[in-house]
Length: 268
Image 1 (cartoon, rainbow, N blue to C red):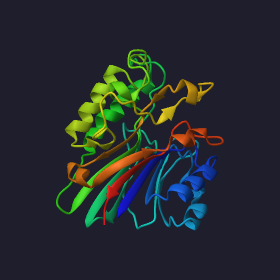
Image 2: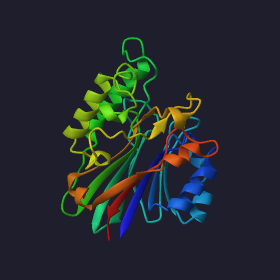
Image 3: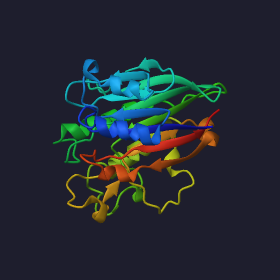
Image 4: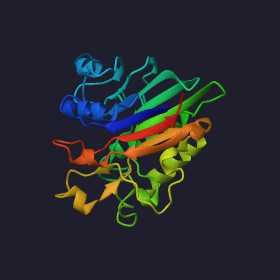
């Protein structure tokens, strides 16, 4: 049986609720992880989600900024809403659920974007981003015979050369600078995570999940970046069967600049 987990930076869940409903009706993932919900917990639009069969909703939100939410067709146990860099931003939510005979931990992340200037001396947002990634070392891919871990979200870094439309032109652009990509990959590997989206994908193949609002014609220019990620503990790799990037969602009415990524697992 195919089990699917989707991740999507929705860029305001209340503003784009019609898009969320359309996505759930058309794709029906078992779990959907949203980022940048920009919504306090008591104003989260739960009713239309429950109407579509997503009865289990975990939220870590705040007014006007950031925010993550994980919604599911099956029971979720909220495990943690971690604070990073001693800042109260709502950027992390972990839940536990059962699938495939295992108890799985699912981390939903929204990493800081980092501002425009890749210099920690003059840009505190960039310093915050690097500090946040450093603290992610504590989020490990814990697993044993009866458990496993998955991490998804808008991680706001395109780590590999072909995760951006032009490696050379973006080397000094926040999200693809060497200090970001090096620390990001070192953190992922040290914490035991497997980058599922790059499994069995030729290195030179471009992968994008984000296209800027600034482009007059995003589809024609196709200047994308892979900012959204799906990782797992090594023991779940045999159950991973692939993923879809719903590129067409970038062309929906009043879209997010990110599109959904749907990871597929062979769980009973």
